[in-house]
Picture 1: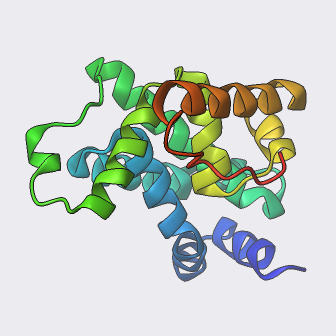
Picture 2: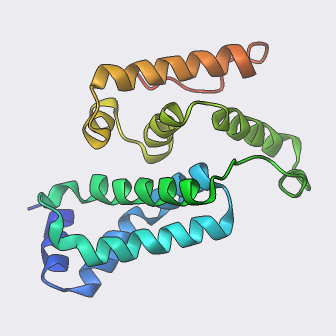
Amino acid sequence: MKPIAKWVKKAKKGDGDAFILLVKQYEDVLFRAATRMLRDEQDVADVLQDTIMTAYEKIHTLKRNEYFNTWIYKILLNQCNRLLAKRNKVVSLDEHTLQGQDDGNFRAIELADALDGLAPDTKTVFTLYYIVGMNSREISEFLNEPEGTIKSRLSRGRNELRTTYFQNEGVLVNEKGS
């Protein structure tokens, strides 16, 4: 049995230490995904806390222990979408974000702003693919959509970024062979 599945089994039996070990395995990628979607530190902290609490309370509902990572990402994604819908929030760069940025960081901010310009379903796929590190098949299963749709969104999003934002600067989005 893989260590993750073993920890999930223990966590399902009420072992809090096993649950903490599970969450620690994914905390960095959860943080990056939430930051990409929300970009407000307080919102990210709230969503991460809600995600961990929900996962702890509902871990007994996880059917296949080896899919803990996909399950907790889905909880995170739902929490982010719930918060965005509740606040009807438009994420944008403000002057505070731009203060103190050197040229290297400005390029990252420019890319983040470009990603915010993508359609929500495409941005979600980009976040899962490039930030979380899922492949197109995993995203397909995760979002319950055909893999061809996921590949199409990745391709369409890359093309949009190339033509709309970075046509004179080269491609900033690496293609991982979706």
